[in-house]
Image 1 (cartoon, rainbow, N blue to C red):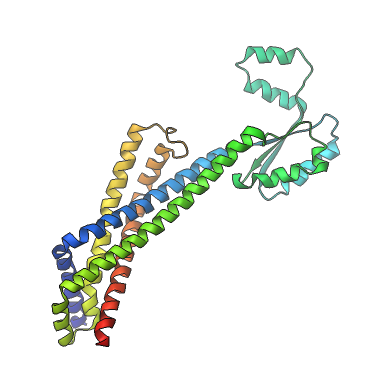
Image 2 (image 1 turned 180 degrees about the vertical axis):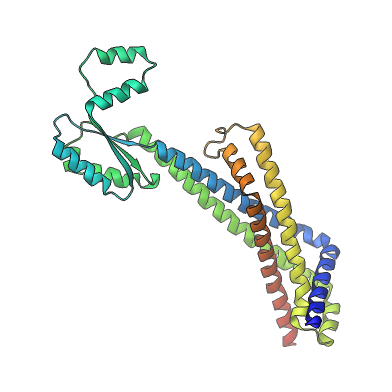
Length: 314
């Protein structure tokens, strides 16, 4: 047991010494890993922010169905029942003609001209069915049901999910989906680049120490005793990169929060992003360290494995 602890200590000590010795070689690997981890962190915060923004938009989205005055109570009740059965429907609210008029007056209580105009005529507003969807990406499912001939026959006008409003909602949901996918692709690309650079960095370190490693093999050193210091070295890359990444991202959000207002960047609510990052700081920090260590360890294991296989075949 004591022999194993001594061997582990020597591996760790040698790995830390290699990190100091190979600082110049490590700069490129650390730089790319910092970019990768920063993209990962920014993507996590951005996705949470987009999700919060989309939720706020979804909470405000209401599909209004305007009914003809000739619709009977039985027809209205059947329509409400059937709409509630649609999986993407979160809530259904019915406003009678009088309730629709009261709601209109409340919404326009600051516009005297509109209130005077509508008070001089019989109630022109139709009874309205208000539908709140669960997922804005699937609003079309609700619209498809409402477009059935038997349901169109009950409607006095097009639903509110049409024209420019439909186009705007579709663009928002597509933009959020695209940004999430682009973030994931960016993370995968930079993670791959990081692993390749670390892989080549370790190969260069092995080449520089080839004589020393050959002597270690002649003296009977195990594969893990030879490989261990390189794994420790690249794990240090990951820890250093995570620390730099968390610092840079924190600085970015602090500066952005003071430079922009909450709505200045559209879907990216800076105030929410800054708050979300701060409230999950230690979780992000631990996750980045884990990811950095994983990327570094896997890269070095692959690089040293190829070297050890090559030496064993001689």
